[in-house]
Image 1 (tube, rainbow, N blue to C red):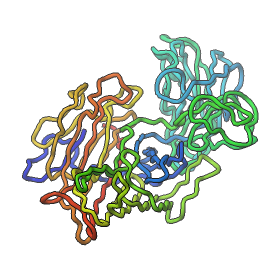
Image 2: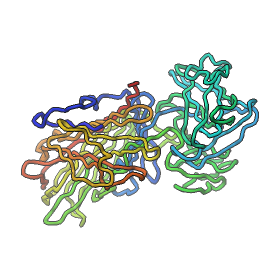
Image 3: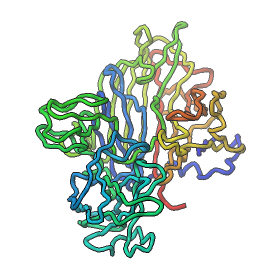
Image 4: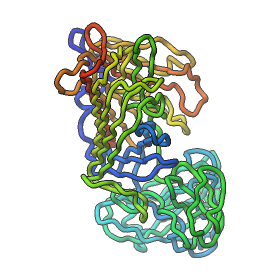
Length: 536
């Protein structure tokens, strides 16, 4: 749901699921991280609660303008022990998928399957902090039972039981849809330190059959853990078919067995060689489990202003007209340098961007010097934008000081994400009511804060967004309102991201907003995310 905080004269909130202040509470995350993204972009990660993080794509393909925060995915963090790390005993079939995702084919890039009652697999997992254990598998129409042992017994297997009088603990791998991706079952909780996890085919299930298909064992993770993403590609290294790596912000899986080349793969789609071994490219990894909560769209700011009868639009990769002059990116106060080993993440507690640019008209006339700062801490992203007018008077038609997009579906499974809008004194607005139509904007005067709740598979995402004036001398912007577009493109059911919506906090001033030579304009926007995993 979405809650809008309005001034008292507009009535009291009725039926809101949370007081608005709760949307800006800390989520309990501990770390942030930076990594290379595809095509000179950046991947920015922030923990939004225990074992959950938000992954944000910052586009920077145009080197003449600033980075643009364009997409956010939410994930549950798990340390992955893939097939390549397992000891296999008995008869197993070796399999490979066609890519990452939530539906179609089996999960992951490397998997093993068996129907033999004498086949088993084991792997040693380890973490100093308490952790839970999952078996990642594929549900199949002929799926049988999978038995799980820890350290040679079932004493620590405390999250599953005996499903059918088998005489031991197991779980069924049957699914009405064959080869359905991204299935996992928690088999144990509350472990610490090293433990040996063993699983085996335990017989036929009804309905179902006698085959199991396993891809990974996973344990609880955090951004600071080493196994939450595939390792970076390394030259001259022997890989097996299905091994997953990353390089240059792209994720790859090996299409055969053998050593890698001297230079890493560079393709962003399809299959190509690194000079010695073929790799299939994907834009995101098989793990962790991502769920889209919005779609690519500018969110720091955007504006349209008029100078002498000529209009110009400003704003990141979408609108441009911002000439980048300098950029500094730091992690915990030190200049950031991309990682070259491990899983590619540079982990810390605070990321800061400072980008200095010049706003210009479409014809190239300088309008204002601009400095955009970003401070990213666990669960919070804060932007500060300061403009200094250079001469010509710019009359703003609109200034979006803060924006937050959302979707009705997660992009693959068609699970609901953001579904309703909660308004003071009125019935909730259901986004699905706007399927296939592009309605007028819903306007809320004096509203600067927005609250969203999005139900996801592993909990509820609580998302607070606000924008307002910076406390700078002579600031010409002093009035802020919000409006909602519940379906930007009149989208109908059936697309990958249905019923797109976007909320805008707009900046203005009494008598109209203008910026001239020697004048200053400053505003901030803040995004606060946390994952609520408490049982309802």
